[in-house]
Length: 57
Image 1 (spheres, rainbow, N blue to C red):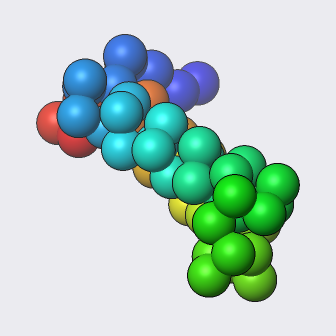
Image 2 (image 1 turned 135 degrees about the horizontal axis):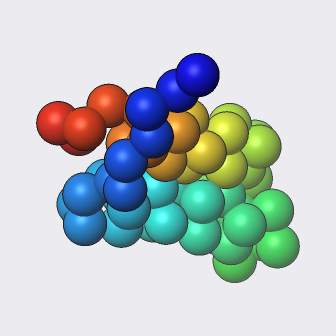
């Protein structure tokens, strides 16, 4: 069905950074990002998904 591959190191750490920022914002460690916490986590998951679907990312 899908030909999945492991994401590159940069893609993985970018998704980890976005997800971590979203979690930190939700826990009010970064007050300026609180309204965007959900979208930061979603963006991190989308980046990770795209890194798995496309070999060149």
